[in-house]
Length: 121
Image 1 (tube, rainbow, N blue to C red):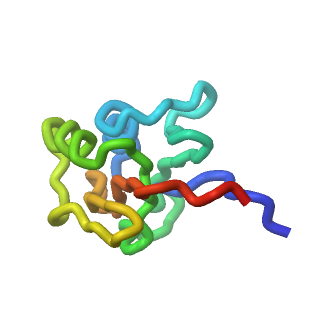
Image 2: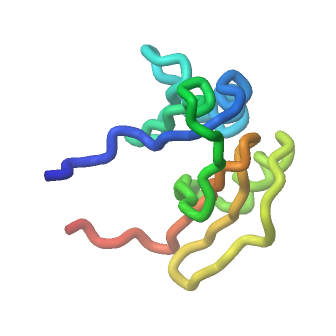
C-alpha cells in the first residue's frame, strides 16, 4: 500500500527564515518549482506554517531526520561556524555516529554517519 515518503513536513513560524536555514546553512538543494521545499538526496523537506491554516505551531521533537554526512566532525564544525548550536557531544552507538541540533523553529535534526553501509538487499 505505502510505496514511499513524498516529503518530511517542517513546521515553522517564519517560512522565509526556515528556507534560509535549510538552503543556505544546511546547503540543501532548493526545489525549482516550490519556494519552501528543499532536497537532501531524494528526500524533500517541505516547510509550512501551521498557524496560517488555524493549527497551533509545535516543533517536531524526538523524530530526528538523520542527515547523512561523510565526516561528522567536519560537518559539525562547518555548521557551528554558521551559528548552529549542537545539543551535546557526538553520540557513538557502535554502529553509527550522530550529532543532534535544532533548526531555528526548534525542530530536531541530526548529522548522521554509519560506520559501514548495510549490504544491499
